Length: 270
Image 1: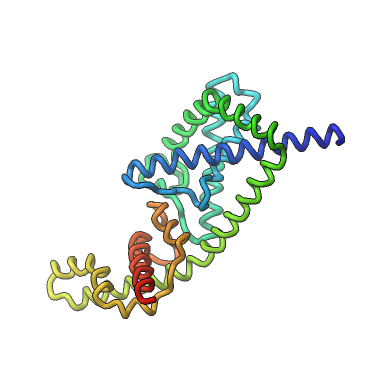
Image 2: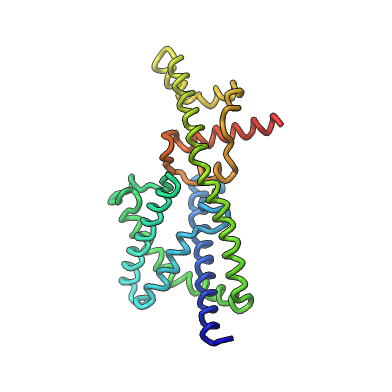
């Protein structure tokens, strides 16, 4: 094999493996944090598999672009904070344009910009990346080198193939989710309106506002008109607590609750 081709193949393999290694580390961190706060296991990734690509892109970008300042902690910190903030902003903007939904929101965080990024979050990521580069990366590098030596480019190709299948499957579900969640959201709003109109007092109106799901349980024939959501779509509604759907004003949690009821009802009806 041509020496130049061999070098290119080795570099390609290393960077692909670094990407997936840090996408997995990010998935562990974020899913673990969300699971602790919710006191139940939550896969907080966009994909089904145990990876969050934005972490993979962010850390590999830091490793590739900030290597010249790796020895200067201050420059590494500032460069990491700026670079990851830029990646987070672009990712938020692209996902909102593609899927008509905002997947995270920092409007409640001080010094935020458009709710997509925020200075305290950027400062935290800067510290986190310095820790990763100085403490975590040597361990990850040994693991990646072991995979490279043992499996070579085959490992990178297999991971890329699995990733592309996962991405394509999830993408198809997300693109189909907008119309379905709009129909379910409109049905929930209509149900709440009917219950409020039937209530006599303000207290009763408030009670009915929260009793719409129970009304669906009592009148399950109304469920037959609604579209089903796939497991992937229901998971995404619950995995992103700050998800904002542009096609409906109904809270994602309400849509997920009704989708779960609809799934159980149709399962029992079979």
